[in-house]
Length: 122
Image 1 (cartoon, rainbow, N blue to C red):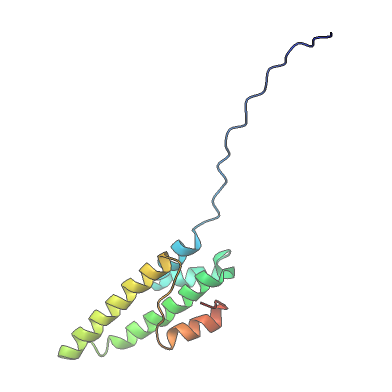
Image 2: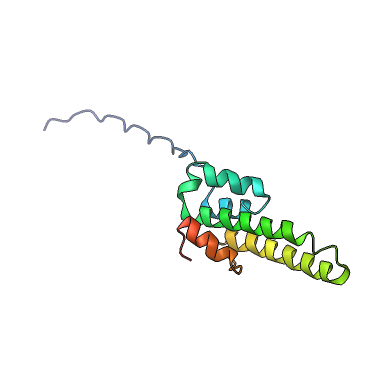
């Protein structure tokens, strides 16, 4: 019998850390609500502007901040102002939480507009 000398087995290659391609969809969706700036950035910057989930939350964020700006004029009214301000803060926090969970908070009119613009069908 011909015995060939055993050749050492090469060590396995080190696990490659695949480069991240940015934020996950849920993180980008939640971050879109932090201020209007990330929402606008996600609407113009690839790869986020091609992802319907991220686009939906970015458009909804823009619409929500327009609503918030308009509501600032109502907030000056004593009791009504506190109620509107508190409702806006609660909606804002819920939008962030829902986006981070991969879902969404349906806001009247704004969500329909965002779904139409983004192509996202919740």
